[in-house]
Each structure stands twice: as C-alpha cells, then as structure tokens.
Length: 304
Figure 1: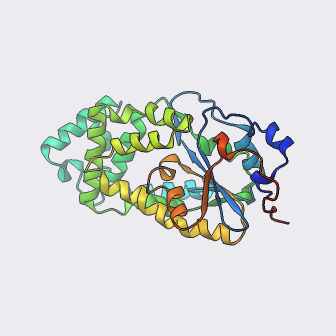
Figure 2: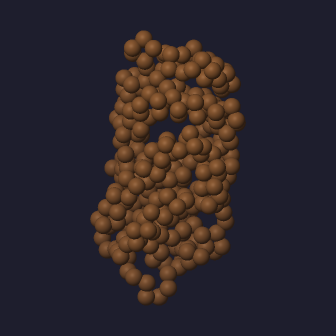
C-alpha cells in the first residue's frame, strides 16, 4: 500500500485532504522508518443514522494490506460465542442469581430488568456475567450495527485479521470469579438506575466530530470506582497487549488499517499515546494540519 502522505497532490485534493477538514471521526497514522499503519476508532452500535464515512477512510479501507478488527466475526466466531454462552453462561449447581445476590440487590435487579423490558425470572438461572450482557443488550433496544459490521462485507475474507479471538473476548467476562461477576452485574444495574446506560449520544457525538479529548472525558466520567477493575481489564490491559501485534505490523511493513472501539484510542492510556511513548510517529490525519500534501524531498513510499 502506498503511503497516504505521499499521494500526488491531485489525489489528495480528490480525497478532500488538502482543504480544511470538517469534523469527522479521528483517524491516526502511526509510522516507523519505512511503513505506516492506520488506527480508526469505531462505535459498536448506533442509536440513529450517522453520516460518518469519508473519502479518506474509504481509500484506506480499500487499499490497506489488511484490515484488523478486535475479532473477525465469521462463522467460527459466532459458533464460539454460542458454545461459550451455553457452556459457561448458566448455573449448573442448583443456584440462581437469588442465591448469589443479597435480597436488596436482587430486588434492584428485578426493577432494572423490568425497566429495560425483561424480567428477573428470565435472568435468574444465568450466571452474573451473562445476565450483565443480557441487561446491556436489552437496555439498547433501538440500536443498529456499528462501524465494524457496516464495513465487514466490503473486506475480502483474506484481508481480515483479528487482534483477538472470540474465545479470548468471551473469556474476559465468562472466566471472571463470582465476586467480580456480581460486581459487574450490580454496576450495570446502577447504570440503568441512574440513566447512564441510556446516554450513548454524548459518546457518539464526540466520536463523530473527532473530539478525542472530549470522548476520553465522557468515558472517564462514567467509570465509577466499582467499574475500575473491569475498565482496566477490558480497555487498559488489552491496549497494552495489542501493542505487540501493532509493532509487528510496522516491523513487517504490513501497512494495515486497524479498527477498534474508539475508547481504546483516546486518553493517556490509549493505543496512539502508548505507541508514541514507544518512539513511533503518531499523527491525526483527519485534521487539516496533518493532511496536507508532503513537502518536496519526503521519504519515498514502500516498494512492492
């Protein structure tokens, strides 16, 4: 893939990159001495129709060596999710949620369940991690597919790669101890009670306008002390693990587009900041000041 920064000026103009950029989702280019990768933050679900695609994103999507997702959602992945849900999602020792929650918390769970259109009886035989996921899904009944599913069909199977497997992702929740599962369930109940679970719009709006700092502030503002262990497990720890794979792409001159949840790319512990701290050049290329055509004498593109 030719580097976007070294495209002829006529192509840059055609892509709208040499004129002041309108607000659009953040897109980063990460470079070492002789190759680039691109990082794009996604929104997994939309609450309404959003016009987010740009010629710049579409060009990179079409010409990247590979497109990396958190998980490639193919037949095998869906099969794995089903198997893990069946094998690890239900109590098998005679207990129910009523046995692992206090009476007060069980009552709160019941009220939260009703408020999102289900019942505590429907959840009762689920392990807390699966009840958490069910409540979260029910809390967003009027949502549509996010970035990954919208672009998935445009990427040939041979170009798709995953930073993780479906089994690994399911394990982040299904393999937790009972105490942490209960904490996560009650944190979700608190989010439903407070209305925070319904407040996707501020995050989507910050994402759409490319406000990385604002998105980080919104996310951080929703993380309570009770949420912090799961936040670290699902965001911070995974960011650090992904660095090895991303550095390998650069070392191998695999000039790929990486699409992950936007929360992984913002803030001091986001992937761009972590890669910059390791000495890579990291630029926002959706912004006009970093999207201008290269100066004469810029280093040459990778040769195929």
